[in-house]
Length: 258
Image 1 (cartoon, rainbow, N blue to C red):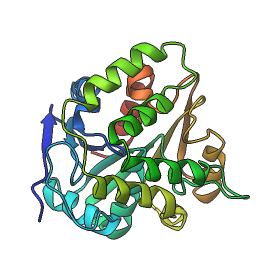
Image 2 (spheres, helix red, strand yellow):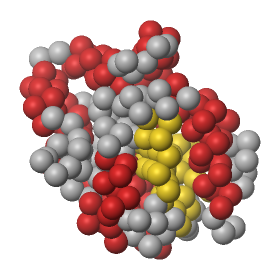
Image 3 (cartoon, one colour):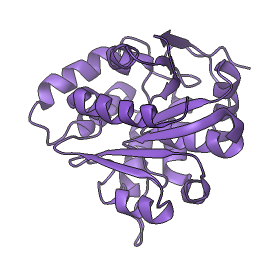
Image 4 (spheres, rainbow, N blue to C red):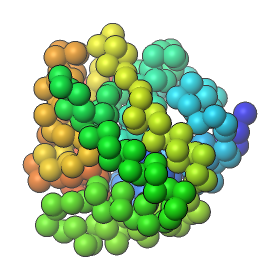
């Protein structure tokens, strides 16, 4: 097993935060501390990200096994942001006894767009993959800027994103390419539709990576899920609209059985 880095704050009902592609726990440490005023919050670095050891290959099956092994709680709420949403859906599928509820934050069970499903243009993911081996840092910076496109406080958010992300070395190319492969190929719609646990979906109305229209499609798959749309938010609502995001998560956590 890889050495998986955890940071835990607070006391109360447990919730585990799983970050997105090329990121690490530093991206939401301040947000986690605010959430930890009422809950036991564990931030976890994906394998090969931040301070966690690498795995090869970087696949959902191996990622899920590593994270479940690293988290001490027997059953808890798992919150996944972006790529992390794919990870927590996979964990709920493979290890249902470890998941009491899910929060999908700016996530999509199928990230690539089809005629019937809203998502990202696959050519964008291909472009990221092509440019990683040429200039990794420039590719990551471009990805960060996409997350705040169209937001009024874009420059401030981008500065905060850069400071958090570059606190640690970037993942190696194999890990980054593995993450892009998951985003490009993983289809977790069947998993979502089969869930019997409480699920909360949080989307930003201005998200350029996860179109807000996917929310209604997800509700069609799982009518019991709670859909929350944050007005004027992009792909990082926990940074741009932290108060609204905290309120949604807290309400959801408080509605669950102790």
